[in-house]
Image (cartoon, rainbow, N blue to C red; front, side, top):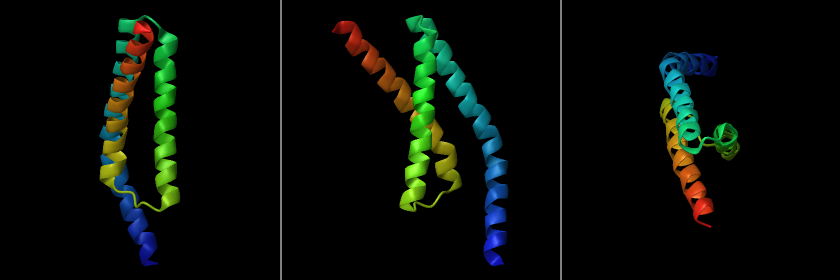
Length: 101
């Protein structure tokens, strides 16, 4: 019975902290799409980058769960921002390489 209360408390804390973080992550993803479309003038590429980023997050969380890595508030709130930064950087590196090839 104790594990039920611990699980419930963990879920309540996640709900409290993820409300504002999920809005910030959504705003970050929206800004990435707007920026990529403005710079590259290719909306399909911006949407593909977002889809790839979401697949990256799902795969990362899935592999962490399969490996038994414990989740915490820190990983749930920080990982999407780190993935966003890496995705934007990688996207522009790949595009620059294609433009110079």
